[in-house]
Image 1 (cartoon, one colour):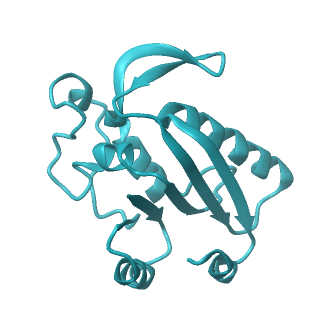
Image 2 (image 1 turned 90 degrees about the horizontal axis):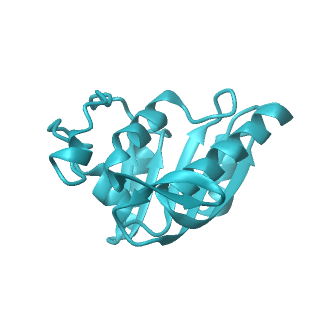
Length: 165
């Protein structure tokens, strides 16, 4: 199953969902609660958030997604606020125990390893912001337990059509 998390707008969500039945599209529209940091998704609720909104099962959704595609405006070398809020709510994709991956300590994944995470950043950004974004995606790849991650930068949203979005 492919999952796309994006901050592009409702019309994109509708056109993508119509195109493919095995595609889950999550529009980062801020119509959901922010993570409270209660850790119930780790300790009491087996990967599911206790807040009952559209992101209640986002950890499980990402845990089954291969590939995971993220489309975000580049904000100071990171994701836009709404996209980051979705990723924050996905903490239940891992367990509260640790392992070593890539020479670093990371949480153990609740789900089997997935192959590909793709991140498309759009908007103007400096070379330093690009480097920061690439480092962030690599850390997210390790934390979410994907084998590889691609990062692509576009200056204009219209250029996303070149990759089929």
